Length: 339
Ligand code: SD4
Image (cartoon, rainbow, N blue to C red; front, top):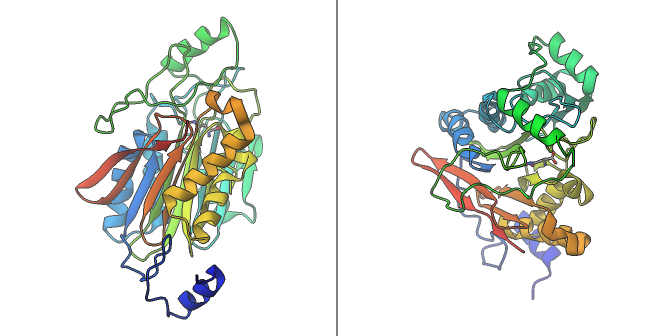
């Protein structure tokens, strides 16, 4: 059997004209542009991203504009309309990464409607990768972002009051409210007042074959004040390597951070795994670490590679993601699961 390193050497010399399981040996034309994103909100987010991609726009613009749509909705689980931390304040995390290894992120950001755009400004206008809390907010305001009122949406207010009765931090396994991949139901508040998920992650390849990704979240509902999840951590909630592919994560951030999840998925694709198998292997690693506690959490990964192949995997049934690669192709895919 041909040793993998030897195979890659041949491949880089353009000599790989045979097929080898797990490798795109004959370099088929890539499916591009393509955009995929987490959960059912992804359908609407993909639509906006697709508008940019179909006109030849960049993947970077697409992944920013796409998730801004989700952040915009005041009655959603991602932006300022989302559930607060246990002190009653909404704090947002976001990250963005482009095809050149540039990245930016914000964490613990309050009263700014579009954390993803602040993350992009961090990437483009500062020598840093990450700004948090008050500093991130001050930077946003300097950049012309409006400071929104520090008030909860009506639904979030109700959920928070409800939550205060017991004040127990009990993250709910992320599940969409319908198993059907055909239904595009809106995100739903669960009985305990939390959303069924709180994040959108998006990765895209544009017509020029360049990759980018974004991830934005209000974090886990009723978290400790100051808690930051995986979404703004480059390598955990999001990672892009323009030679290989891009991945993003959703679910219990602590467990994504533990394995540098999105970076791991991209590295597994570098070793020749398909996007789906790379996501699956990352999920397996979390399950191995968590042991019997794995059944109490949800983590899902999605990924694309340079061939425009896509895939996703999660711990528990109920995670799905939206895939778009043509005007009439924007559809939900049910994530395969391990437990
Ligand atoms: C976090 N990963 O803050 C996010 C939460 C999430 O759907 O994905 N919710 O840990």
